Figure (tube, protein in one colour):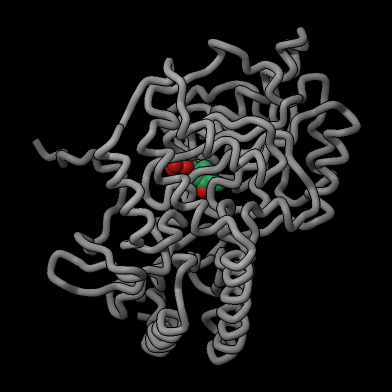
Length: 396
Ligand SMILES: *Cc1c(COP(=O)(O)O)cnc(C)c1O
């Protein structure tokens, strides 16, 4: 027997965190890491937020789980809050991002099929997108490395060039149900779509009665300095998938939709055993209590701008290593001139700084949204030291 008890699908590194303190992770052997990865954009409130812990503790003692066959005061309250704060009229809670995207895909198809437009099942998605690891969500991505070994894919997806409206238009046809897009690509390398692209997709949807579906699993929930990134584009989707940050570390996602978009999602059309259970609702409520207000959001924007300005100044010292900075709020990407993965490993192993590698030679900088000056200074100390003693593998 040589397979590991944990199915070996992840290239797990040597860091083995056992405890979290605010913006730091502490390893088995006591080593402290500055966490500018946040469990990949999950731990918005850091690791030991009293409000989040208290809410989960209290709910765990009161009622952890009941079936969705019963009424849900907690679910109604959180759904109402999301409805009040967004474009949406209705919310389906899930346990993960992929499930939120699945629900979004089903909602988009059902919009058309519920009125007999059975041919309109195809979603146009975009190159280098990441939507999750279920069969539908890998089928929604053009990335072959996620398809290999899992063929055949689910039918009904076509891949256009990201941020290229003409490419999207060229794929439209009688089967088109809508577009599924990350307004800011995360895994793809922190690539914000342009205003014209997002506005253009909205216009196409309005003109042809199609569904505009945003995957804000990574860029949503205050990460970019607005509750959802779409607000900064001045465009509202019909359907939106959210997850990652929304539970602050508790597994939670949601599919948000307008009343019109959700017309196919009646009784019995969809479900989830755990989705939206009281414990998850308590976590989601605590996160929204902390982040869904103007003061918190403007702080995220301000901290994002500060880090970005310092990064832009900093990368000038290393023109051979770094190319440019992109992103919004505290969802930042450092585009490198060399592969980002070995540099990310170097920062982690030699400077105890956790970031995330992404596509397109980009280093993702995704700190908890509650960072302060001390963490920002520590980040730049570690990053500077890491850049100064970095030997890219080809030169080593
Ligand atoms: C992480 C991610 C997903 C998948 O979320 P899981 O919780 O891992 O299923 C989907 N879309 C985007 C944009 C993501 O970043």
